[in-house]
Amino acid sequence: MTMLEFELSERFFSAWGGGEGVALGYGDDAALLDLGPGLAMCLDTLVEGVHFPVDTPADAVGHKALAVNLSDLAAMGAEPGWALLGLTLPDNSAAWVAGFAQGMRALAERTGVALIGGDTTRGPRTITVQLTGCVAPDLALRRSGARVGDEIYVSGYLGDAALGLRLWQAGERAGPAVGRLLRPEPRLALGRALRGLATAGVDVSDGLAADLSHILSASGVGGVLDVERLPLSPALLGRVGRVEAEALALTGGDDYELCFTAPPEAAEVLRKVSEQLALPITRIGRIEGGGALRVLRQGRPIRLDRLGYQHFAGAGGSDEA
Image (cartoon, rainbow, N blue to C red; front, side):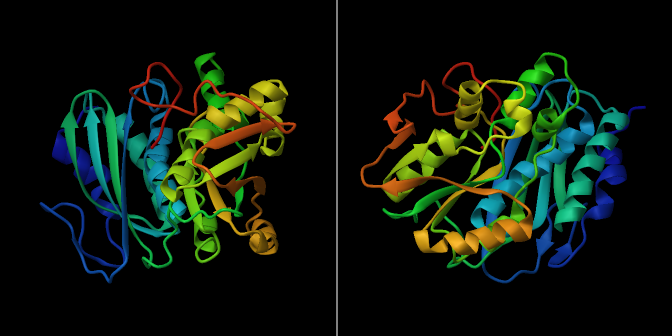
């Protein structure tokens, strides 16, 4: 079944654009919001064959398109609110759009996001989501606040999504690692808990080494990371050896965990946050002087061939910014 552009929008997206702060939602030339101060805004574009495999189920694409933006807001400690959707499609298949909308809407309803507008065009399959949320500027978690003596933490497990991409390309369509690739879980509750506690933060989208380096650069500090401390899941270690698992954790993309820094005296509070959220929070290193990232194995420096994925630096893995 095929449908015209406006029929697609009206059928699949117009009904879930209301909510708090929405004066005028989906269907007009622009949305109208009635808001107080303290907005956080982000935008991500997903391109088929670059950010998700060509044969990814439509509902998983819908989930991920919103999840990667939610992860950006989580890294700032922001509450999500309103989304705009740009959808470019090679054809007007109602079946694909129905699956996409189902996946995106399920996550939107679970996280309190209202879709308030967008556009649909024809071309190579590309999805752009612009997401707006709220956080007081003085509470927003930024990349630039890390201080010498802070400790470096990361949530969850690392490297599973990179393994999931490898398995998907080899023909596997199920399992924990594939699930992490297709349906990342944005750490919104952790982001809220880190307000006023963490000194800097970033979401791990392009690889831990690359994203941690963003904190170091923005803060004007250096950092040391101990690979023995990296949180590696049983699913990952069950498929590859320890050294390869460490490499995937350091430079693989699409984990969407939070990496953040906090002073040593925050350790006990973070332990309680971990328990409350049933989410591992692991100390993996510390902030030091200088301006670079040092990676150690058993106290000895190791060299990374690359820090993570970059669109214009040659072949690589998956990426989300």
